[in-house]
Length: 128
Image (tube, rainbow, N blue to C red; front, side):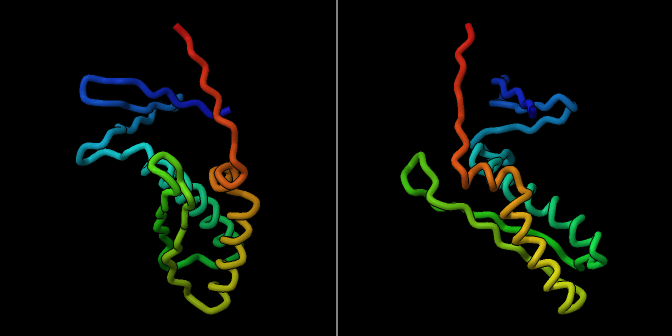
């Protein structure tokens, strides 16, 4: 089970995990909005899975980055999320390996992308 606690602070909101990491959340300059965190989670999950799997196959990419964008269906509902890879493979063979791995990661391994596509239930529990 994953765990994150989000709480209000004097300056806004902060999310902390049980390993001691924290990130400030808000809409002001210099912080991530909740939607941007969702996009970062999709991009991070994909790229952090693609990189070692590609390298394990002997194809370390010269450059590996992703841009993640979203389109809204309504003010409070996303229509789609697009992950666009920016890669520089050292060879055509490396590009082919990367493309196969990236597609497989998206379809089978990235828990964030797969959960969004499936429509994972979100439960709200109110404690006093």
